Length: 185
Image (cartoon, rainbow, N blue to C red; front, top):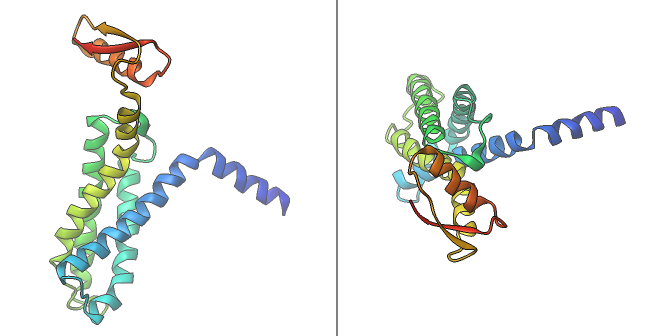
């Protein structure tokens, strides 16, 4: 039994970042769908739709997590998130939502989701997009806000505004003890 516990502990330790993002995505996907239903019905979700929501949530979570994995959202370094990673999130949310919509609309013809409001689906897409992108960008925004101390260190003017200059400014901002404060290019 101890061997199993140590294996689980080793797995969790090795994959803590991925587990964190998967758990966060699950919570955000569920909350996005609830918010979409709440917005659709002005805060009073009908009992029939309320009974259908757990199945719709399960489908949404399963499909979107697979789409996120296909877009390699759990293999990226989110402390250095850039436009390319944000585009991958947009692709993942769009792909996951498209498949989720197809499944949900197909199940509307069955007794499982008969009469489920279609208007919840685009609301869910918009809310999910903002939530997942915000979740991914949160660390970068936090780092930018907390490490950008005006006047901390010697003022430095960067000569060369290309990619190397941009990398240099990022390194200066992310290294608290660098001793330099970039003021411009």
